[in-house]
Length: 399
Ligand SMILES: NC(=O)c1ccc[n+]([C@@H]2O[C@H](COP(=O)([O-])OP(=O)(O)OC[C@H]3O[C@@H](n4cnc5c(N)ncnc54)[C@H](O)[C@@H]3O)[C@@H](O)[C@H]2O)c1
Image 1 (cartoon, rainbow, N blue to C red):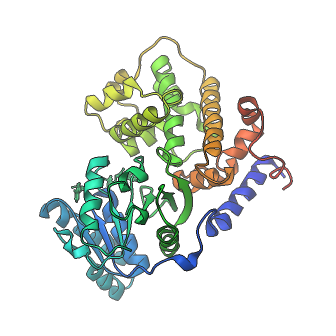
Image 2: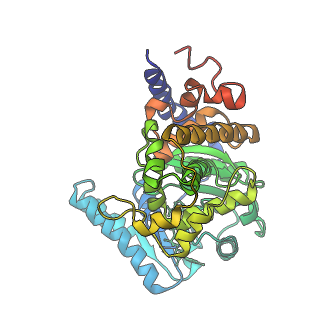
Image 3: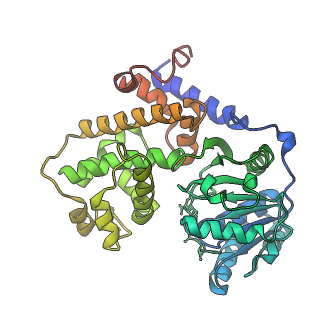
């Protein structure tokens, strides 16, 4: 019974059991039936969502966007993905035809009139999302659920100007949607049990791992990844070679290095999320001035095609003359995580440490052998050192 095996068993239990009975989900009898879905936006996330809803719910899905060109591109993406599934033998010809028929586009939101679940995946700007929800509310029934795929904005604020804010729920997917099972479901201040139950029932039909989160900045995964990435970036800014800082956290066995993740997420998006978190928690989240420089320079790629760090990006990220050892960088990153997880649990962002781990495993691909993160923080002594107590009082030891 090594520590890794104990953590692995714990993680297995999370994805097999806890994922199926989400903590805090309301009575499923309250869920309303979803017979038609609206998707606002036809961009990167919207296309993936439209495909998933059509495939798993087998109901009509109508997409909309600002102009015909973007809309056509979004619908064509979905149809192209259906063709790929057909090519791989994952769906039959009949099913492929049916899926293509189910996913359509409309430039006006009137097409949403009989939709009972509308999800928005438009630009990450509060005013735009509020406007979109107001337009949708004008055409749908009072019971229709309005869901947002926002990564970091307040669901409560987004709902605040609506006639029926109780129907709004956060429904935060992770990219790539087909690969990452996690769905953070966010209850806004006014969200009612019927809307929330509908969200959980829909998540189940979509075969996603739903975790209930409080409406707190960046919810769970993005909050922790931003914090973690921030420590690595800070070490670079202080003078550590980017390659060294990036490698420092490799003992955690993450699916990719922090700088590779930064490239995947996109420096501009990462900066935006860090700004949101800094605004909420200035004492714990910094906005990296160097990352801001990278964004200002219009850099989207951190790595060259041969996986070396782009020399221009390296110059933009680097700063000080105070390099750190790899072990010190890992230590500061782990300490920051331990402190933040404790704060999140005290704030009630999720019910238990297990939900934090379930989120990191299913939303960010963190490995089973660390049990997500809290068992690892416990067994490496970091929880005790930072918070004065472990996250798991004996429960994991009893395995
Ligand atoms: N990209 C990711 O990895 C990711 C992951 C999870 C969540 N999200 C969130 O999903 C949302 C969408 O992100 P994305 O990466 O798909 O962006 P994107 O830029 O690819 O797509 C956004 C689309 O919304 C359209 N749009 C803007 N305003 C509109 C309006 N008023 N009405 C209709 N359409 C409008 C745009 O034309 C664009 O096609 C954001 O809130 C983002 O934070 C993104």
